[in-house]
Image (cartoon, rainbow, N blue to C red; front, side):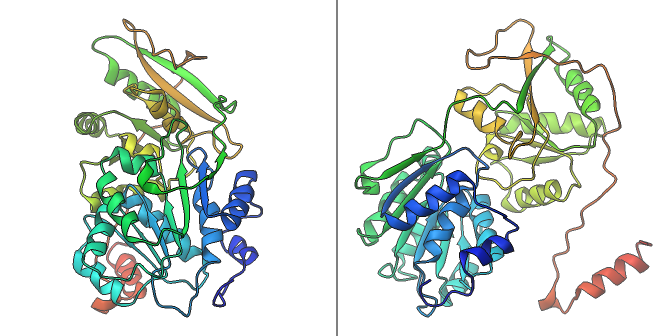
Length: 394
């Protein structure tokens, strides 16, 4: 590896608790390593992040204190997630993530000590580009992760500006979880190798069940379904609109059903806290828009609920792959109105029997967010002592 990186690929995989790369990851790392233009198409949750990080890490000269790998992503959460993966690799490479909603002063401070890998949303990266806060001359690789999503949410202009400013001969990697993609000319791909792992086949480990509801009992049916599922496993309730998040959340709260919310209409801090609570198990239910269907690192879940039906097959697919992953089984529950037919893309579905009730849906745990830390001269021991003495924890 260039510039004596601390870890070999084998060391990195051990650090990440990965015994062996998947077929897709093996092929992707090999192709990305050996060619300058690669497109990787693979479902959400199949490890695309690892497949592009391993080969681009080899390109980094740790003795050169400049941005050498640039990774563009459509959301703050994905930027934070990839940054965390790089840190967990323990390769001795400096990495930073920048994105809208983060204090610009914090970005500027981070860029005083230049990272080798810079991850960010196109809007924030473009701002740094236009203000010359780091050199573009040393960039060796550009990764457009979930690039179609970046275009979909309106980052085309910023992406054009960024790509125009960087060297044309660098390595370029594009990833997507969507089959129907168009590569814009401004990306500048030349005869790319396309690795397509989107088979279009139905996941045999995924069970589709429909929950029938009539005009005035949809919310009641949701409670019955959640009581049937119980608290032993985690799941996501998908809706289409931010307004639906508020409406359904208020209803669940009235019914004392513990949950977290996740949508683009929430403040960044609140979204991050919701994910923390879902990952650590404080919340067993995540109520979310399709923002949670792609590119977000969430734990293996046992079920998802299409409380509001998606408009397109792509959204239906992205939601479903949140469960029944990595050789595990999962269930997708579809709420169907008794007076409307399901979309043609929803097939092979049977009625759900939700008559059996399991356990209550209140959480036994709470997550406490503490804003102080080392800079405030507050240690882990101080926090533990407070909780044990004042909170009577045992």
